Length: 283
Image: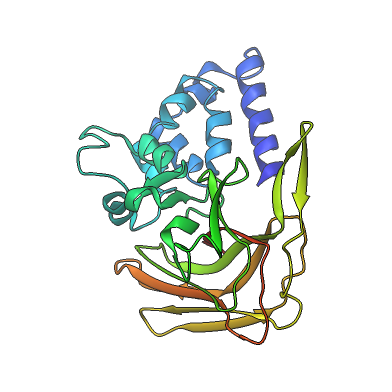
């Protein structure tokens, strides 16, 4: 699409600058808005914004409702009702504005989740904060503590000092657009901070994750299941650990996804882990 767009823009530029070689009745500026719009629906949003600068006809067509509705998921009305209050967008909000609002991260469920549309696919991304998860022992300061950090979109992460029974559970219900999605846990071994203006990571409490693997599981309301196991080995860096995939075939019905992360072998302790969030994004 990139090379095709470049050729298209060059043709548009030539048509507007070489007035002497093209009769006025053939100028692209005279094309009906509906014709221009029928071409723009095949471009991605970034390309639509670029060609809007060609002339007035393209600028008008680039704001057409049917052009931006083609970039929204088919169930966008369900997504809107899940993300926004009924009066939050307003009655006269155009499709372009709706698209822009949905592509920006929006907080839901008391700020424990953020939702946005992936610009490349038009599908939903959901980010669940560690504060929105059920974490065994989270209220006992001997095991867990909350750390403020700019490395999280939620500005805080759960830090595990040491525990025998490690278990994290969560769920989300959302009207996902049709497609295949992957669920990840965003984790880091070690506690990061700043020293003399530089990022450092304290790994003093990291232990136990190389003895037995961690089990990641997910299940959906329509019966899909996935299980993966792996050792946690990425010291000092945030890493997305994949729990599994699920497929949405009916976007008219909200999908409930349950997920967990466990290491419940009580023959040894484990600790030094930062838990930031759970991410669901298009595969």
